[in-house]
Length: 318
Image (cartoon, rainbow, N blue to C red; front, side, top):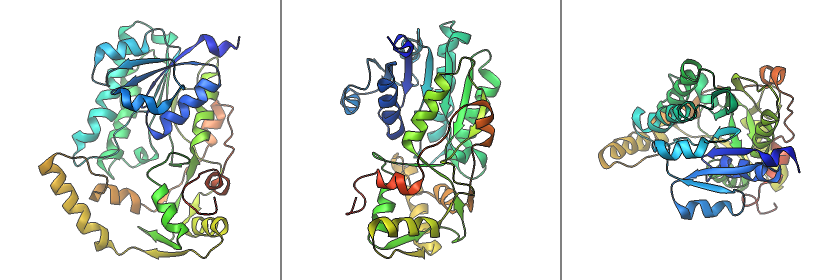
């Protein structure tokens, strides 16, 4: 029996894009996967990629204790990415994480249970948006409150791959020949293919003494990507010209302000807000793996062209 088959990994956010891929990777590696799920119809989307289900959410302390009890590690993928107020993000990204740390502490597992929290590169700019601020404060919470719990917070850049619902519409538009640029044309950004996140988590789980701290990571492309790099890649894969065009600011500013105002009045969680636009327009979302690779034996395997080739449903030739 593989040694990993004796270990239980507890996962939050298992029904999301990254969480689902991670659960598949954990299951294939022989780990026992226990997930936190709010609704049965959502857990069905994972098929047979988990072994145990705890019904509840990040504010159900009883459920959280069941989730982490006896777990070798907790992988926290759950996160709020939509909202019109700071509190919309804090409820999950700060308070939910605080509850998870408390559950590990309450079960008196401390040093026997390690915690990996998936943060965001946006946390590097906490004054940019509600989301960025909540992710940064979640990291600070770990620094200040995790105590003896071995923990690591990982800051991925833009994540894409099969199952992605955020970047896939953009790639579909590019496949038709048009690439909208929301900020500066000379902006640069790092990216990472979702399977490389799963391999990174597995590498951390296999460490005898787990790396700890806050780390960025990407797909290994030095200096990240420009819009010209992305459009050229899409043009090669789809075998057609792709033209980048800068979206005039008012085209998005006006609906973003209206959207946030209506969301606050009617109580829904929007994606397009002035704060989200500030993230999209930031000119530098480049990171690298140097600090992480000093403490962890991991190498990304897939850069953009291969990753898009592996992602169905966006270009008619793929």
